[in-house]
Image (cartoon, rainbow, N blue to C red; front, side):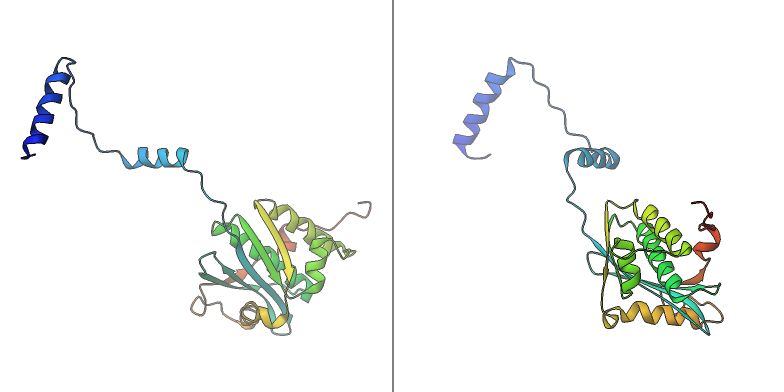
Length: 206
């Protein structure tokens, strides 16, 4: 501003613009909510990345349990060990694990997921490759497909047992717990069997 050429230019513009009665007002601060609304309207979010959900269920003489490991797109792990208070078969425990994985993934905000299970029967029945003839298995399939519709995109894949070791360990730990504790993993609790609340007997004429 001290340079003579710049000062002269400023004086010239001041004289020429003076006839228009221009009034200067400082910009006020933008409220946080207004800025948030503006950004949500103007900026289109990128397609959400896929969350990975590893599930496993186990049934043994000591008890029945479910293990779930959720891995977010940035790589954060969420681990759940759920003890089933009812006696179930191994296949039912596997189905309970899938349901627990679906519900947990939705609770943490995932909209696109890939479920991983080491059970060939369960994964192929959910995909429709194998036919489920047992009434309870049919009810599980209906419940899983209905609940999975909340996601923008989902799928299930079979993986080797050695690649599902963490979920398997959580399921076995939950099954063996006589008293449920929250110290071992992020979430350990008792699981009310889905068949008791949501899977009613299939009518004979259905």
